[in-house]
Length: 302
Ligand SMILES: [Zn+2]
Image 1: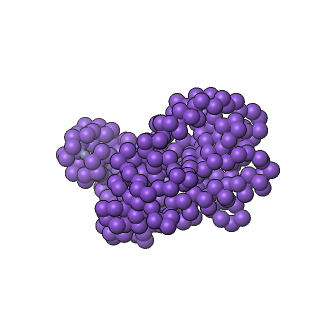
Image 2 (image 1 turned 90 degrees about the vertical axis):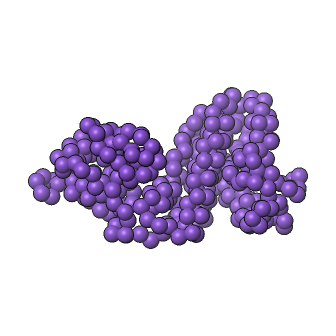
Image 3 (image 1 turned 180 degrees about the vertical axis):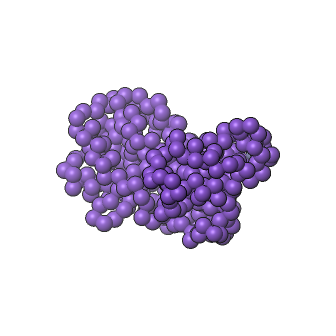
């Protein structure tokens, strides 16, 4: 049973938007692409565990804190007798392990040591369970989700589940019977309560309203070449259509994400969307979907 679905983090959403509206540095772009790839891999794993048999809880993207240390669990699988914190890695290509570091054969690039990361979060998770007076068996693993990933020189005792082993891991899991009781339910509930919604280490570039490109881009191909036809925006690049109201709301969401301290007013959204529409259209969309605060000139929306 899925208790917490996965959504893009604010960090990923912000970088996605900045990547369209400004020129990210090479380093920022690299970080952004890593996040996109990671998220893609997590979604792929989600679809693989959709149909797990027996009673189990699935909690995605848990960010927890214990003794002032934060740690993240991509997927937490709670079964009757065991809890699996899983780290999903979407690495691609040929890699090898040397003294616990992972290197790409082709590029020579060094990846952050995934074993240290996993050991750290597993140990913090055990501490958290101890603090909560819970005695569950914890078995943490790294899932390498990309079918085009090969790992050379991986010692047998490492907590790795390689692409060719994922199906077997799921089959073995499914073999064991699992019935959850009140204790499992309470633990899951507690973990959800302890989840931190804001990532303290999100690495966001510094940006200002003035420096960002304004305007509405296509929801599909991100092109700014948009034409208005009747009640739709039509992309001149890929042809995808979007209802005007929906495009405005998409823009409002993006604006709020990028500028949480700015007030949402008709004028602000008008300036941000830069569409050839009268202000009344924006006001109507805002009024229908947000709460109106104040009246006349100082009206804003929440
Ligand atoms: Zn398009």
